[in-house]
Amino acid sequence: MKQLCVLLILCVTALFTACSPGELDFSYRDLPPGDPTRGADLFTQSIDGKASCLQCHAVGTGQSAGPPFQAYAATASQCVKQQSAEEYTFYSILRPSKHIVQGYSNIMPSNYAKKLSRQEIADLIAYLLTL
Ligand code: HEC
Image 1: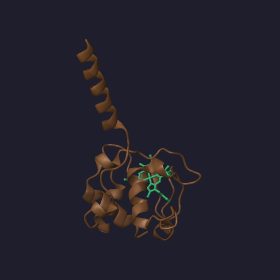
Image 2: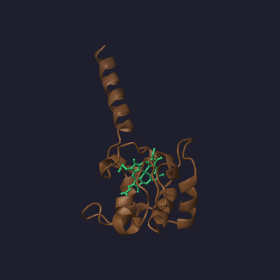
Image 3: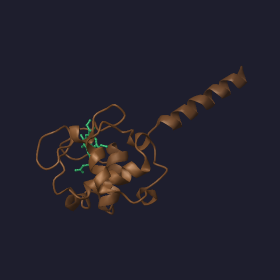
């Protein structure tokens, strides 16, 4: 009985660690070089059968559930102290609830670290920084 309890606790702990959106085990520096053209394509495509980035983010002006990308590269570097535009974008995509853009709610999907490959993440960042 005691062994069973220990086993149960171990399982629950393992499940918890696997599912909690803790720290990422890679950083912007671990990504391959990004291709903005591929990123632009990916931006318009449904990810994992769910909304595309474009469905929540207008490019240029426009109202959506998320902030529009206009002069994004210029402002991204000033959003969080000591974070480059690249790092800020990296965390905005993979850990969106870490920093919530003022005036918006925390509804951006938080599982992109699992749903996108490192190459895709790099491509998206490269694209966003051309905006
Ligand atoms: C369901 C709607 C939704 C989808 C889909 C979505 N986002 Fe977002 N996104 C938001 C919202 C809302 C915010 C603002 C709140 C926050 O900071 O999390 C945001 C914030 C951001 C930011 C920070 C913007 C800034 O001005 O500082 C970036 C970068 C971003 N999203 C990129 C993406 C990319 C890339 C995708 C596709 C892979 C995507 N988002 C998909 C809703 C969405």
